[in-house]
Image 1 (cartoon, rainbow, N blue to C red):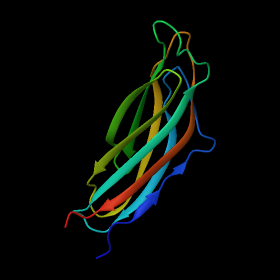
Image 2: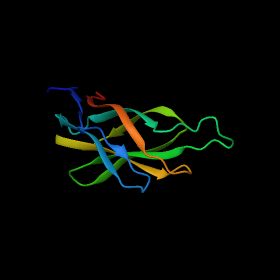
Image 3: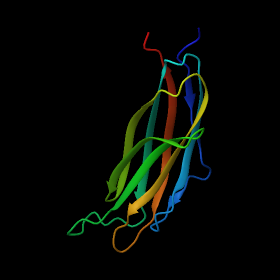
Length: 138
């Protein structure tokens, strides 16, 4: 019984610029083979992004609210959704857990601007780390 491999995601190239029109963009993909149906896949994402023209000094503050989400591609299952608001530049880091069973599974990390600041601004993805790790609970 093998266990507990780690897979490193393959990032979109070039990294996307999220549009204020809420269009979803693929940021990264990771594929992992799970040996034991009872094992858990831990997915970790860290996304560094920035607004093109900072409005951090404005009153009230104006920023983009982004949503990031992980989808298991075999059945389009939503594994985790997070939101974060960027007033200048931001690193959003989160962890998700999935129990997909035994087999090889691919996960996609997507992002989009949920609400754009006024005036509207794009959000540039500057760096992404997306990993999957098989965890045995035995």
